[in-house]
Amino acid sequence: MEAEGSDGWDFLDWVGSDTSACVFRLLDDPADLARAAAVSRSWRRFVAENEFCKSLCLRMCPEVANFTRAVEVSRSPPPPAAAHDSESSHDAELRGRERDHRIYSYLAGALASGKPSVDCILHCIGASSTDNFPDESIENTLEPLDRVNHRPSYWSSGGQDDPDVPESLTYRLNSDLCIIREIRIQPFKAYFQHGHPIYSSKAVRIRTGHSKLPPGSESFVTHEDENKRVIADENYVWTYTSPEFPMVQENVLQSFKLPRPVLCIGGVVKIELLGRIQKQATDDRYYICVCHAQVFGRSLSPVFMVDISDPAGYSILKYLPAVRNLCAEDIIPDDAEDSLEWHSLVARYRQMKHLAMMNVLLGPVQFMDEEDVGAIQFMAEEDVGAIQFMAEEDNGGVSDDDPLV
Image 1 (tube, helix red, strand yellow):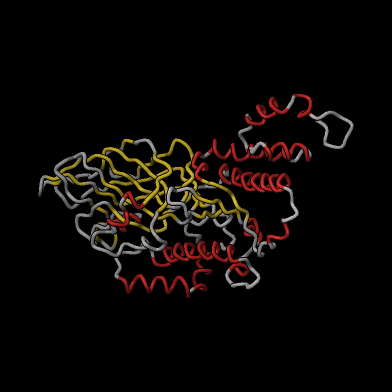
Image 2 (cartoon, helix red, strand yellow; image 1 turned 180 degrees about the vertical axis):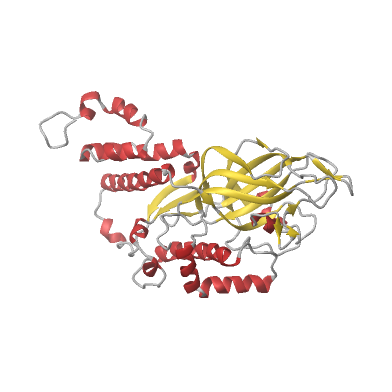
């Protein structure tokens, strides 16, 4: 296995490309592929041309198939198109393969990272129904306790005569690209009712995907119908649906671990609560109540971002390698020398980070009118100093890779 340029033999030449490809496809650790690509120029070219890193990403997270292409975004503006006019189609293809290898190699490493998971919920989008709004709003599920200020804190569905009617809770995550490993839900125990009934569901199912609505359409729950028009399934593309997990009728935080890590492309998680168990004595109808919900995983932003513009749900993976070497002072000021695409992606990330920091500062946002929403947005844009200070103390669920923390 001599390096290129020596007098020894090369494993790839000795066993042939087909057998070599079979061997390389058996590698299931991104670090092994990275080491193989570092052996020599011929090995790196072989790894890049056969897209082994992309194939590994697909095996780890099949949702990667939703990326139609991958783009490397530099901070400086791209060179003029004339710079590549003299390039042959073969050279352009090799350059593209090398770029994809670089991007998917880093993505595979991010997918396989052993960094600890955190609660990734940024804010609520809406619930399928609510019994008493806003007192029993979905916003209460962001509180870690079932009592706040000596009052019960929980979400309650509307009552149903049919125990098979499902419910759902939809949340926005703190990044458009997250690795999700686990969902935690705590059914509510009505300690103020006779017998202290627990209003759990029979089973739980999780969907992940993205919204087809314009950005900002589901920022906060501001309507009495709890954004029912926003949470309608026709407004979303679901790229993953989990198996059903049975739920026990106990007032404890129950963990539902996904069969494998799931790449949530678009930052939306829908928790489906399937089947009802408990009737309310006063009206003899079935209800589901949840006092706390968590979505555990890791954000891949800002190193990886996503552009979703295809109505069918296909997307473009954006890789920002320069973010790794930046600090807060490098990102927050607007630099006229930066590329427009860099500005756009960083602005998107900053907006979501600001909202996450506001959750740390103010706690879960309760029912708001339009003036409240405007005030929150103003604070997210203007009070950068306070947010940066909080970022030093508590990352609010933002990824450890975040250079702003």
